[in-house]
Length: 287
Image (cartoon, helix red, strand yellow):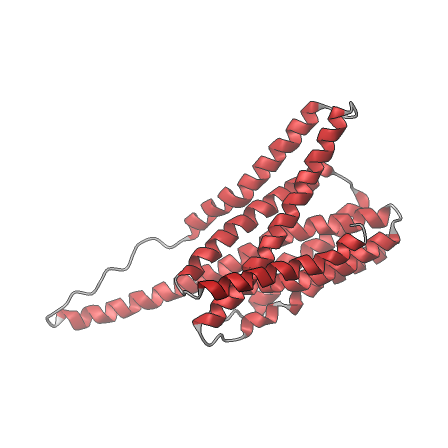
């Protein structure tokens, strides 16, 4: 498979993330629907979390086996473990630190009852509430872009797999990887827009989120075709795993206040199974 063909098909695999993103434009009618979509997204993200960490641990396990059979050094294994921990910390604690710095400062005070001053304070309170709602909206959109970034890191690693298999002449495997990742990426759009709740994103925001989440598949196929680096793959897997775990915790906490626990857990299971089923295409092809 030529470089141009590999890049074109890698772009196609990443583009399918846009199939799920337009759902974010739908106006959800009640809390049940909000919880259902968000927890379905958590299910998809949970599968991606398991998937990326299994790939990362596989790289470390292979290096350990090589060291045990005197085909590699223990120092290299230690280096990979360090990359795994550092990448995971960057994806989880790093995102938490960035999120804390981006949060608006200050809290809204309760209104003062009685007197003519109450009416004047009510106007101030209304302005403060409007500002608080706008801040919550911006935070929801930032969370969506954070999810897109975490998925993008994961998809970069997928693109590496496409590029490496195409470069080594495994055309059948590369084709199956492309089809499988295209199906998988189509479900990742739900993971990005699900936690937005009743926030309706603009088409421009959806375009940006799709570019952040799906574009790295295209870039990864380019890098993978020319460069093979297990430490690079491991670093991306670890960062993606940490970021996804952080996002799962944020969405889970946000949805708890709406109730509907049983529905949420059922939808989480459904999202996880969708991720498993779409990934079976890759597994059956040997990816």
